[in-house]
Amino acid sequence: MQYIYENFTFPPEQSFTVRSEILEVKKYTSLKSHVNFEIALIENCCGKRFIGDHIEDFSGTELVLLGSYLPHCWQYYNAIDDKVQPQAVVVHFFPDFLGKDLLAKPEAVHLNSLFENAAKGLLFTGPTVARAKIILNQMLFETGLSRAALMLQLLDVLAQSTSCKSLSSPSFNIIETSTEATKINRVFDYIFKHFKEDISLQDVASIIPMSTAAFCRFFKLKTNRTLVEFIKEIRVGHAAKLLMEGNHNITETCYKSGYNNISNFNKHFKEVKGLSPRDFTKLYKITA
Image 1 (cartoon, rainbow, N blue to C red):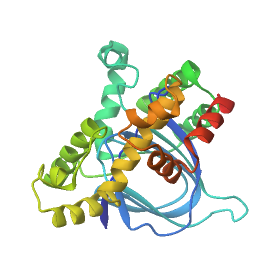
Image 2: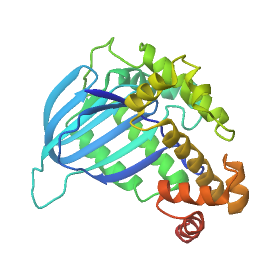
Image 3: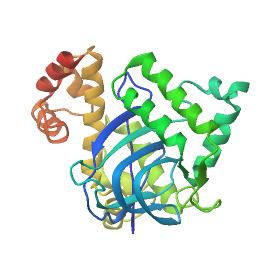
Image 4: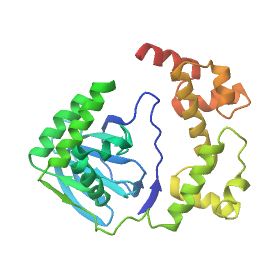
């Protein structure tokens, strides 16, 4: 399987994300990996689960916690109930999403143990799944502190669970020990620091170092996108953040996001977000 390293950015008003999605019944051929922790509740589906070096068939409802950089993939074969679409609720977060001080408290001892074990991937069964499902469905409709409180409640349920098992081998984490991961993370760091400036292919390729042709193949293989596409997504993501904060107009946002041409900015923003910056701002205000 191909390995793809993903990068998530959280909206300015959120320290973690939770979303519901309909699952497409098909065989995926790429293992995904990202620095964020992930909680995934999968329902009404059967297929095959790949977590690190773990491979196993699954059926029905399952709940999994994944640590940073743990490669994972689900292949969905068919729905259990043809009248209901297979779906998942997915949470992405960092263990210190409410601050590092929380994990230093004595009450967080079970949380720290949970996060350490998540490096191997954890599969939960029994009553834990039912309790977690209730909380996850509530989280989809809450915001602010109410949702953060539910997140803590969810993590406590997982930390206290006696019905879970580790999935991957204890020593398996392809990203943490991978030379390729070190290279791609150096590229990410450079782009995040300099995306407001002109970034040339030669400058980025020299970080690794590689020839420009070799770097293009490497970056496409590891991220499933070109360098230009990746930089565009980072700039547009930053622009969306500025527009949501409401402190800058569209022209100011354009120049603060690495663009020197408003027409090009509008074009790229619509390609990534599906809306023009103006329509995006209007929609966000209406939603808020």
